Length: 145
Length: 289
Image (cartoon, rainbow over all chains, first blue to last red; front, side, top):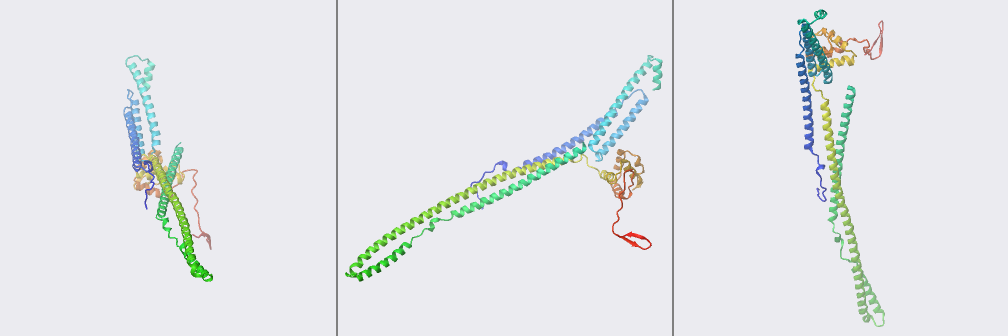
């Protein structure tokens, strides 16, 4: 028989707040989904920037250097796409992808910088030869490049 | 570092799972305690109500015993008075009436006194019984109050434990979600991983051994595998991604029979013979299966 004699009042804390628990669970899942989307978006953005970097391969007057830069950019682009495919098909772990991608970006940056330096120096020497400021050994060295 | 991360994540998951389980167990225990306290409160209230239904004054009744004694004494006195009157010189007629009257008065006094004493005793007994019953009822009601408080306390603790358990569950879900791969494997990727795992883990093959074993298969379902031995791992993985999952599944099933060791350290497992040897004439012996 139910009785309320000397009923001990229950505080709000004595009740399980299922609404809050449900909200926390939903928020957790939503945050996780958002985080994953952010990570994927960051990967895509990094890829876009790298593709842009490759499309801006250094140009110059030296035909061989230009061809080499384009060949390098093409190979790097192929490797980048391969990494993307392996990552998004689940065969490459994001951690391994990040390491490989960073190596690729660093190598590209250094390679492009070297090509820029070469083109700049080659341009200077060509300009000197064009304006008859070069010495004979300079012209001979330029011809060998 | 990767191993440490994996171990740390595993420990984190196990800890969260354990504490979550303990919280739910505690919540269950508190619910049981609450039910027990409520049951005790109910029982105590029932007992108190039962005691309140008893009227101890119902036990009081008219005292008949003094009357009985008085009647017996009166009869005895009447007989004595009559005998004395018979035996005296004055005769029974002269004394019987007076003796009878005195005896009646004495008996009346005794009867009254006894009745009063008995009544007083009964009243005291009833009062004491009532007092004791009131104390008992008070104790029962205090027990009710205590049980109610215990039930409330158990409910509060149970709610806290449940809330903690759910927090743990949320945390566990978060950890599990963060452990999930960022990109789900495609069907071909799953089969390719399975093939590489079998060759590396079960057969101890290096990356070269894996490539060579696949190249040795030649043409499978119209797909030429012979050139994969010269591929780097990324190229091999990309090649396998382009192979239908059904074909890779077929290759995976063939592996235990087709694999060859390309590793100088790999030793194939010895074939185990079971049963007892049986000797056959002109043959030697063979193994009974």
